[in-house]
Length: 539
Image (cartoon, rainbow, N blue to C red):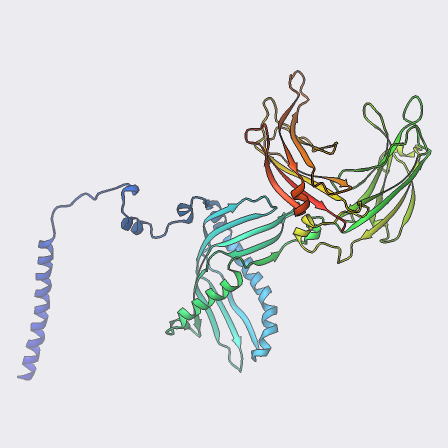
């Protein structure tokens, strides 16, 4: 009887299940509506907040913040380059970390640590948007927002006490918004000296760690502890205003920072050949260092004299003694028309022994071409005394800001006075009525200087430097700057016109030592000019 009852019970249970499923399916079908309604489609602007969040669980930065730009082109570039970037980055990680690991492992009784496998996976990081700041300083500031959900395979073997367990890092996620500053911008590739990186908020870092195949992050409490520890440590090191600084170029070479001073004494010239048809010539000498944009130094004019005596001294700032040379040119002064060139010569600075004076008698040549037959003709000689004085370590500027802002005036600057340096950087929105070929005219204490003209350019960039040696600080003086446009086209009624001007008080320059600002031009609709001014004293 027991066996029979058991069989009957199992049979009844099976029949009950089948009958229940059939009845449930019948009731489900009957309770469903037979009317099929067309879904309602609404524009995005008419959707409520909950619907938008369901459709867009993650809004890109460039949508939330209009001042962030889309960088789809950068994401596409990284996607195409990622297989090669992955290998290059992993190779750099290995070569960088291996010496550090070998140095640190002995103190922990570890015999060996090596990468069994190192790859960042097939998924590249993506940039959600980027904001770029513009400043009046020589720097570029970017704030990208990037997210990286990677599938790396980082396998590290650790050999110690006869065992060799392996640790594996998997499923890496990094979300961060760094501020990247490239400064200072210099005319040497890659055009910046340093990279400064700061985090604008705590980063999100998530990853998995396996030890001998077991997931360590599954240990209760360990996952949250490790995540917060990493966030806090990274924030303590790099959260703004703290920065990670990466040096790219030597600032002294990149910015051509002054490394010494060349003292030149123009003594005399002998047996010069006259250029005037009637009477003797009126010679003067010009001195200039090659690879330098500073104006030439000039001696006084010695009228009607083919054997002039000058005995005048000049100081020239040296930036690269291995490359630069002193260029000496003698001209015949003319009251009207172009001054005639009487001859020239050059002295490479690498031929001078530092701190040792050297007197040279140089033949004047037509040019520096050794194969030019005209150089065999006698044009006279010039006598100069030279001495190169390198700066000592205590005299060298130690920071980029000191190079531009805290340079001292050259030797020979009058006591109580100094050197006024005016750097014309660039113009913006300059517009003439008949033509726009802008150049800047500087007028200071009756002395006039000019930049080179930029043809058909409303936003010219000059980057030209002018210096004025003064007996006393120009506290009560003003610098007059006028942007003018000229053209050589024939037939125009207005070959020259003013694009605007500005008068700058120099009291702030003397007090602050350096000013770098953009000035709105008077008599110009929107024109502006960026000018940097420095006041350098010998003390």
